[in-house]
Length: 411
Ligand code: C5P
Image (tube, rainbow, N blue to C red; front, side, top):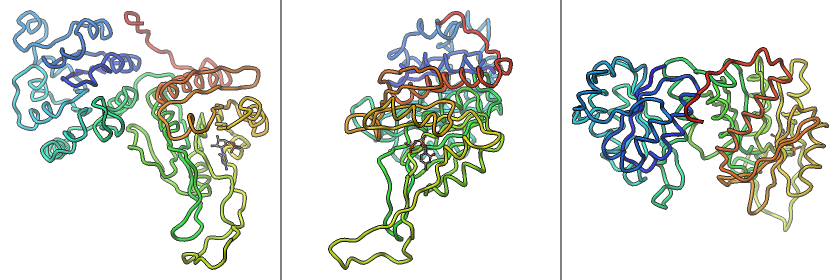
C-alpha cells in the first residue's frame, strides 16, 4: 500500500516517526509530505530516516517535482493520511484552497483521505472546527479520532491524536486490507471493562475497571493485522477504529456475546473485570428503604474465561489476574485451575491498576514468566500482544506464522 503521510504543525507531530514505523511494519510504502509549520515540531531528517525516502514539503521544489510531480504523487497514493491534522489544515481542505504541496495533493487525489485531528479541546469543540469536520465527513473524508484525555497544554478533553497503532489499523481497513502483522488472518476476541449487575431499575453492582487495558489490547491486536471482536462492558472510552465492538452490560450478557463470537477464534483474551456475583433477583421496581439494614442475596456469575478454556476447540486463552496481594501465587493458581495458556498478573490498589493510563504486569505460562515494568497501557498492550503471538505460534505451529517484511534502515 502506498501512503502519502501528511504531517502538519501540531505538537502530536512528535508521534509521527512511530506512526511511520507502525505503517511500514504492515508493509506500507510511505511518502512523507510536511507543511512548513510541521517542521517546527519534528525534523525532516528524523522522518527521512524512518520512512526511507526524502521528505517532500515544497510545491516549488523543481528537482523533486521533476522526479515525481505533485499530480503523480496524488495518483501514486492508495491513501492520503494526515496525522496530525490541525484545525487549520481541516479548514483549508474544506475551502478547497491549495497553497502548499499537501493540500494540493488532497485536491488532486482520487484515493481515500483520512485525517487524524490533534488540537486543544476548545479548538476541537469550536463550532467552526465542528462544521468543518461535518463537511469533510459528508465528502467522504475519514476522520480518525480524536481521542479524549490529557493534552499537551495540560488540560483534559477531546483533541488528542489517536495512538499510532490505532491510526495504522484504520488506514489499512480503509482499503480493505489489514496489511502485514504478527496476527494477520487470525481472529482475536477480547473482553474489556467492568460489568453491571442490576439490583433494581436504578441501581447496580460494578467495579473500578476503566476498560483501558482491554481496549489497548484490542487495538494492539488489530494493529498486528488480526480480525478483532471487542466485547465491552460499560466504559467511557472512544470506540477504537478497525475492529468490531459488541457492547454488553452484565456478566450474563458478556458470557452469551463471548460464546457467540468465539466460534473460529484463534486467541481469546479476557481483560474484563467480570462481576463474580450478581443479585439473585432483580427487583422490578425501585427498592424502597424501610429497615436500618438490608441483605442482598447474591448468586455466582458464570466464569466466562474458564468456560472458553474448557471448550473442545478452545482458542489460545489468556486471562488476567488483578490482585492486591500474593500476585504471582494467585495468578499461577488461576492459570492451572482455569486451564489457561497464559495469565497476565497485575497489582491493583490505590496507586496502580484500575482507572489509570499506566500499568505494570507479569505474564505467566506453564514453565515460564516475563515481567513488563510500568509503562503506558498502550505500550504494555503492544508488548503483551507480541508475547501472546509468539506463544500462540509456538503452541499452534510456527509454520502458520506470517512472514513479515523486514524494515532494515530504522531499527
Ligand atoms: O478468578 P478471577 O475473577 O480473579 O479471574 C480473573 C480472570 O477471569 C480475568 O481474565 C477475567 O476476565 C476472567 N473472568 C471471567 N468471568 C468471570 C470472572 C472472571 O471471564 N465471571
